[in-house]
Image (tube, rainbow over all chains, first blue to last red):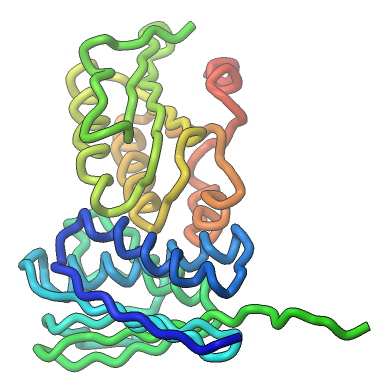
Length: 145
Length: 127
């Protein structure tokens, strides 16, 4: 498998949630994923981009950067905003935690990302922004025996 | 039998929601189509809630057959509608829950709150 990379910059408009997840899914297609794996990736990307829009930028229109890297048989997805940041990452990772209960959010965003991807790292600094790195491993094609 | 509500069946911004009603059983039947994410959730929510308030239903049944994508925004939407009917002593039903949607619903423990049936006919039998 050849290594590959892509970078996408979008404004934090909610209609870009669908655009972002479709772009990342298309990029992932070269890893020959199953339909199930593609659905996992789309869902995780949708969660991360939605977080950037409603929590990172609190609905102000600013830029979100999405970077994907393919290294061997793993896909890294990095989603970055330059918004308010997360004051308590540990609390944010808890299922059902939401900093904005008035929005009728379930608080399941990070739980979904963690469940559907093989790893999730969150780097965040208040008033600087948030960077999410998610990795999905794909089974190496086996030609043995 | 379900009667299509001509007034509200106009598709909003595409095809996310189609509302049918059943007066006899005091239940609002909603078909969700397409993709349920944060972008679409707001309009779907407003559509369901305005119909629910206007016509004084007690229960809501949401058919997920036409849904081909749902993220955690869907859990928020379902939990919110559960609160709405629960306050009025009504019930929330989900029908045609596919494998993908079920995977997300499982994480949220929503199964304990809502009644999941195969289709609208099954819901009507249990009302």
